[in-house]
Each structure stands twice: as C-alpha cells, then as structure tokens.
Amino acid sequence: MRGCPIRETLEHLGSKWTVLVVIALSRQTRRFSELRRDIPDISQRMLTQTLRDLERVGLVERELHAAVPPRVDYRLSPMGMSLLPPLLGIIDWATQNGGAMHGARQRYDAAAEAG
Amino acid sequence: MRGCPIRETLEHLGSKWTVLVVIALSRQTRRFSELRRDIPDISQRMLTQTLRDLERVGLVERELHAAVPPRVDYRLSPMGMSLLPPLLGIIDWATQNGGAMHGARQRYDAAAEAG
DNA sequence: CGGAATCCCGTGTGATACTG
DNA sequence: CAGTATCACACGGGATTCCG
Image 1 (tube, rainbow over the protein chains, first blue to last red):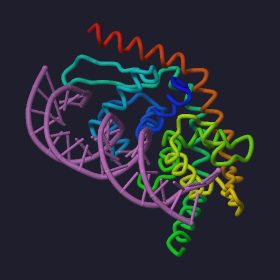
Image 2: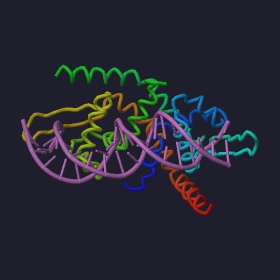
Image 3: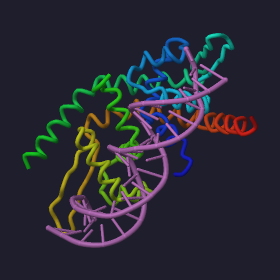
Image 4: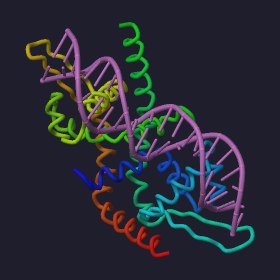
C-alpha cells in the first residue's frame, strides 16, 4: 500500500493545480508569465511550486534562457505527453458527467436539509 | 474557471481515498466493514466521509438493511461504473510510469542536494 | 455493525513583500 | 521577468470516544 505508484500519481494529480498546468502545456511550450495568464486564479507561489513538482518527477522540462529580461520556457517531457491521452479520458468523462454530479449533489443536499 | 466540472471532478479524485474506494467497489458490492479490510490504512472516519461524498455526487449507492446486526451495502451506480474505463487508463499509466517518475525524483533531489 | 461527535495537528495554500 | 522568503490560516485527515 505504501509507495503505491497509483496513489503517488493521484496525489500529484490531486494537488489542485497540476492538471491545469499540464493541460496548459499540452499544446505548446509556455513561459512562466504566459502560464499565469492561462490560469488566472493561480498564485505566483503555487505556479512555481507546481512547476517544480512536475519538473521533479520528470513530466515537465524547464529551459532557462540567460538574457535580459530573463526568459524561462516550460514544456511537457515525452513522459508528460504520454499522460495526456488517459488524462483526456478523465476530462471527457468529467465534461459529460459534471452536470449529473452537480444535480445529484443538489438533490442530496436538499434532501438532507429537509430531513 | 469557477464551478469548472473538470476541477470539481479532480478534487474528488484527489481526495486521497476516493479512487481506492471506487476500485474496491468496482468488482462487487461491499459492506462497510469489508471496505475497511480492503483498504487497511483508511480510518473509520475517512471511509465514512469518502462514501458519503461519493454517494452525494451520485457515484455510489447505499443500501441499508434494517436487521440485527445492521448491514449496509455499497455499490457503484451506473455513473460510477462509467468512470471506471477512464480511471483505469490513469491507473495503467501510473503503473507503467511510476518507476520512471520515482527515478526522476531521486535524480532531481540528488542533484539539488549536490548543487 | 455502522456510524457520529469531538479534539487536535500538519501542511497545503494564499497574501504580501522582497530580489537577481 | 521569474522567481524566493516570510507570515498566517483554513482545512484535510488521524486518534479517540460515544451512540442506536
């Protein structure tokens, strides 16, 4: 149970911003400031932290261009890109079933309040 | 961005125990105490909470048998079962790439400590 | 057996300010 | 521009105890 790769992976995906960053990088290389604009409500700190974590596990590659002003590019690694198909499976499911889940939740809460 | 069904779904899947419970229920209906044995290191409180959350959003159905001793069965709803294929896609990916992620992380940490 | 209620702590996350 | 540093806090989650 401990060190289970499934659980480790899911903890990464569950860290609130990881998937959004991966999706933002799925189409093309992006700079730090571009990612901030892609994901408006992420804080600077969380974007940095999320990118470091993804880089650390080998899903994202970071390229520093020594220039003035400094420029840093982020892109998905091959392994990061291999994550896209299964991830899109989940996203498709969420898109199709999100409404049903929302409705079920409202009915459940309404019934709980009435009871 | 707010109320995005993808983010809501991922927050459920990211809540540490949700996926394990879904997997435990993927084969057959299970009782509360059976689930505790299936997932040894889950606390009673977290199992209850996870099941309530899954029931609330319509992924799990709960059936109470009024008897002595009481008996409660949990099973995946049709919507819950429809989640299995995309979920297995992620799990397969994690199984295949977990080792690579682990290695990348160790190399990253070693390089960080050396630098 | 299948919970609910309570207490408590670690840490994930946000806001803000500062730096190369 | 692309971060780092620090503080502050809510919240997830574990341990324990009690209930129908």
